[in-house]
Length: 434
View 1 (tube, rainbow, N blue to C red):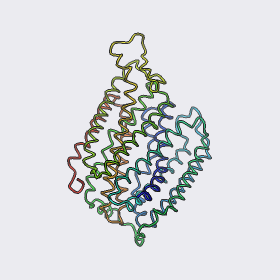
View 2: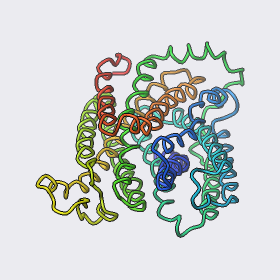
View 3: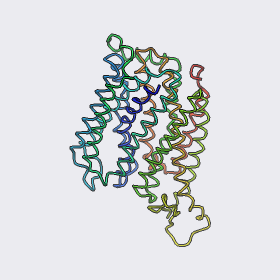
């Protein structure tokens, strides 16, 4: 099993680099330049290619081998990073991304989305049912490591390393990964692809996908299980930034610290699944804990969102308490000295539980896709993965507009209600999933 998991881990790590670049680096930089929460959220439109994986997933199923697709798409990602290295960084005072940089980042997402389809197809074909728990742990953990290296790592090292050098390093990383994808022995002994046939008509293809047992219920779950968590995860760090937490601190805790907690949660999920815990009972327990954690975070936000309340630049690291705008502290304000640490704890707790939930959910998705015929497995898993991403992007993109329009208090109350929905939905699981 180790021979399979090690090359998959390396490839999933490089697959997480574009996500970390745009989720960890861009929102903080854009917000620091004064963009509204709405405009920061709209930057996620660069993820659009991930929503169209179903366009090329049938080609991966029927044209060539997944390993060839994986090698070519990874090499193409290195080429795009090389082009980004040749561009100058955004000028100081510029409100948004340069058009050329935005276009190349869009291409980076396109290449990563093709790579994702090919890599997931390999994983579905390679992993035995008993290996799904460890395999999905490797998938989630390695992907998040790549994301934090490109997110928090860039925030930490951009003042030291030049823009060109950073993207040249990414270029070399992708080309090494392309060589690994082509040469790794564990990825070679796959059954030869069936004779190339034209992809089925879209309507017939969709009917075949939905006919796989458990697909409709699983699709509904992956579309909704991250709604509340994703919205809160997008807004709460920016709220802390508005309250005075410095950009380097936020980059450290929201990228490195939070992702470390997420990786710990994913690893725990994999360990529990490896001990023959079924994903559905595990999800029922963890989703309740996640709801309680988000409720605590919402209460903290209500306390911090008061006139004159401000977190000092080093409060989170030094535990200096809340700096109030006025002179003497009211009795209720004594509680606020503990709030900065509590805010950090709530952020890390949500990422820990989110990692656990993600590993269990991806195991559920892969189990469902293995019930599909071999010629449909890439397309079936891409359908579920696209819906999973759509659910996350939906609230990640709209969260800023909801906060601007409804206010933070009402917005977080809505997110709390959305986090309760998957708990109810689990009770409707069909027997093929349960």
